[in-house]
Length: 484
Figure 1 (tube, rainbow, N blue to C red):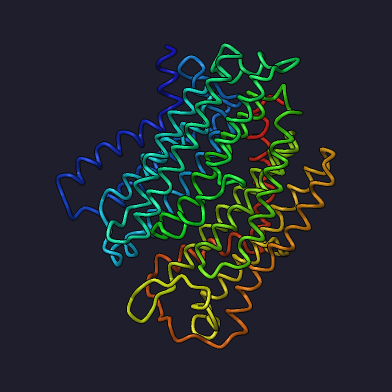
Figure 2: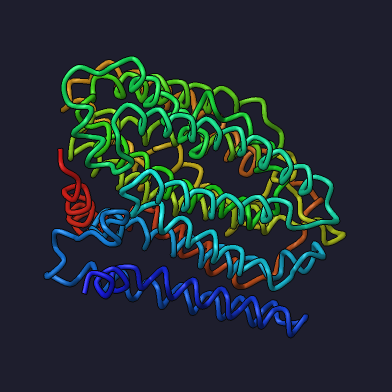
């Protein structure tokens, strides 16, 4: 009976696993099956999303449940994160075929690798044990290393994959060392039992374990000072892959970090909160300042990603249900803004058909591509948190949670740093609307990109405020799945 319940809770992962294996066989038999495999991968993700939505709507599982003897936890938090991951993966698959075909790298393995990465992320967000955490993390990472270097004919892509692999291995080593310390000093790998063992006075060994685990997780979410890989990998990887890296893995690693902090380290909030506050401030400042001098749009969005992770961590630093709920609201809005930004980038094509990424390439874009310039302006203003765009609401709820938790100085510094970050977003808008038009770009006729980007632009426009009641209810319920 326990096995049946475990398989019931993990059916979304089973759907994706069996689909991935079947599609791998199809790709081996048919060398020209790239677009077909992409469509079937999207269908598999939709099926997993439907099952996850069913679990979310089922009142019998309102309080969640454990699977495989406590290794895996099905609850509202994990289900919400999975829906967001599946959404980002679907977008990353449907925007990729034409881009990769022009780059000479469209193969059926692309959507399959995304499926396997998503399986790892699904395991990560439901992990309730250090062993489950590591299995999910490495399954995601192994697929991500290949995705980063997917276009083999592009030296930048190969270099990005190599850098990601080397630095990822270092981060995994740090994480494993922290996990071994926690196991040695608490006697368990289960999050709940670790939390109980850490109650009371904390020893030096356990403290070092917490520091190492948080450091390893900070690398996975590209938080400063463990962000060094992000600009290089984002620039070198194919743009659809970069869009995927900037969205889905961030969701998985952030939710996993929340579970660790609240469930496993909850009894030692005073210890981990200081670390999270420092990492949040460093990410906000380094992300804002580092982006100012960038001339490559993908590198600029990489620093934007680091900056936004800092704002997300402010919600976690609050250490409250309100803080986690605010963090989830920000995360949902962030995924839409980031995917939209990269979709706009993918529509910048030169006269020779090549994809352009330079800041100077968008000069006067409003005169040659007015709708594209408008969509990009919406995403940039929203990322900057300028009202009335929906990104403003994400920052507002995070700062409110910090103030409610007595972290007023952190909120004040965050608000001040967001003004610095607004500079480079406004710089992009200024280039598009006030500089002389560049003749380097030609019109792009990819309707998939236009429709997807337009829909995401509407989602982060003032129309997004209509979703606030639903977002508040969903994120509050998800945050309530954790024991504060």
